[in-house]
Structure formats: structure tokens, C-alpha cells
Image (cartoon, rainbow, N blue to C red):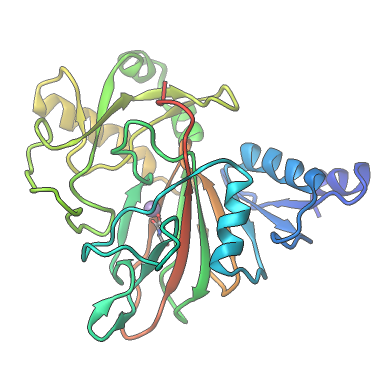
Length: 296
Ligand code: OGA
Ligand code: MN
């Protein structure tokens, strides 16, 4: 057990146990049932989340209503994006987004299929993107479909001083054309010119509103564009910044079990998913918690 988890347990009666992954980000929370956290446990969990950026809670039994109720303790929820087929996911619960390859009567019940989902943050094509997402595992394949997370604090910190100076005041467009599985979003006509594709413009370097830490805010690579730069210059600088994302030292990989709840800070982390065998089943339910302000 780490020093931190010992303290968390010893100092506060009923406190939760927090075990850092040892990677650049992520911690597991033990000894909690997310349906019945008291206020003190919730406060400890929220502190740990700010510190570790991604939390894993195993062994949960959550209905969609439970997932929505726990998510609401962090704030108002964003409605789920419309599914690739144009349908909403869960009848009567528009906050739930389903990530799944399962088909019923030939129709996918969720998004993202069984392929790779490339590095991204969720819904940053919005002016005010969600501050957090929670993903709850209902069915997982025997192999594959692992999800990795990277710390955009750690990546920013690792940049050379010269690069930090160069990017300090740049703005970046986060593309709204494609989702992370490469599918075109509902209602969008795809263009592959990053200068004209739809999306939201955010600062490339942001200050996290809760922690005050600086982070690199990339969103996703495809159709990203650094405003005011020649296209070639924008592409070259983005490629250079993205080499940091690929470095294992800034990430943590999660191998799912049924009953896992993972919540990530959608401002200071990105995530990606490995592909898996489409003849196996993977069903995850997600909520997304509204952000308070435009990234700054
Ligand atoms: C998501 C997402 C990846 C996964 O739900 O936002 O990117 O592992 N999911 O299912
Ligand atoms: Mn995602």
C-alpha cells in the first residue's frame, strides 16, 4: 500500500482508499459503493480525481439511473451525442451514451464499433466541452478493447522551453467532423481541409480551472488546425506536439473488467482504445459532465 493510501485511510474515519497506478496519471479507489457514498467520501474521491486525473472504481453494480445519479453529484450532465446511425441511445435517458460493437437486428446499439479509437478528448468540438466523462463496463471482450489515458499536464511539462514559448498564445481548432472511431458525425458534411472544417477554437495551452495547472489542449489530431498559421506550418507543429502523446511515459493503460467505472478529467487528459475482435461483445455506458466555462 502506498504512503498516500495509508494516510487517506488513517487520518479520516470512513475515508476511501486511493491507490495510485504508479504511471503518469490514474488511481484506483477501493472500498466504495458509488450508489451510497457519503459527503465526506465523495469529497475525498473528488480530491483524488483532481490529483490523479483518472479514477478507476472496480466491482460496481450500477443501473443507468445509478450511473446518472452518481455523475450528477459532479454537476449537470451533457446530453449524449447522437449515435452514428442518427438514433439516441437509451430510451428515456438521453444522458447515456453507449459505446458498443453489438448489433441488434443489424442495428448497432452504440458507437465506435470494434476498431481502434484514436487519441482524443470527448466533445471538444463544443465551445464548452464536458469537464468529465464516466465509462461503466457492462460487457467486455476476453481480449483487446483496452483504454489508455494520457496526462496533458505531464506532456505540457515535458515540452522544451522554446516550444512552450512558441505555442503560448496559439489557438487550435478541435474538429467536429469525425468521432474517434473515424465515423462522420451526424449532420456534418465531411471536408478534409482543417482550415474550413467545423469545430470549436480553444487555446492550445490552457490553465485547468480547478487545479491551476497548465496543460496542452490538443483534442484530436485529424483536421486540427492552429489558427493564423500556414497549413503546412500548422501540420508540422501539430505533428511535433503529437510525438509526445505517443510516448508511453505519459500514459496509463486500463484493462477492463465487468463492473469497472472509470472517470476521467476531460480537460487535462486524452484517451484512446485498442481494437478488439468484432465477433466478441463489448458494451459500455457513458455519461458526460458539463464544463463550467470555455477552456482558457
Ligand atoms: C468514450 C471513449 C473508449 C472506450 O467513451 O468516450 O472514447 O474504451 N471510449 O470505449
Ligand atoms: Mn472518448
